[in-house]
Image 1 (cartoon, rainbow, N blue to C red):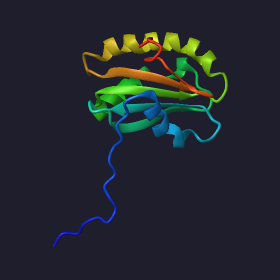
Image 2 (cartoon, helix red, strand yellow):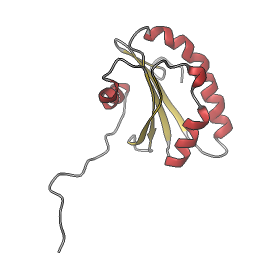
Image 3 (spheres, rainbow, N blue to C red):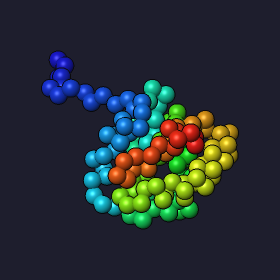
Amino acid sequence: MYTFRKEPLLRKPILEEPNDVITYVSSSFRDTDEHFTCLFMNNKGQVLNAKMISRSTVDYDDISLQEIYGTAKEENAYGVITVHNKPQQGREVLGQFKSFLEKMMKAKDTFSAETSVDFIDHIVIDESYHSVQEMGWA
């Protein structure tokens, strides 16, 4: 005899735009600490895994690209969305992010022989949000 679950199975949400990402991560960003989180996505726009890479003061120079792409490979991810909440001075961090984005794209080329992971977007959240994809940087 089969035993059925009484609660419905949780379906993975589909993240189609930055607002979907913000809704998805908002519960983990409730405190006032900075977070740098990676969302590892499948080809349907669903989150396979979310991993916090850094907490408290986030310095882009300390973010391990090898960890990001290595985890993406382990998860068999199609793409990565990175999210950085910056409770204060979010626009300031965008300038710092440009050099990180360049490193991320070069790392993608380096790791592309091992994995075909796409860099989908990076979102900085402060009083609003800033998506590098919407700004045309990615």
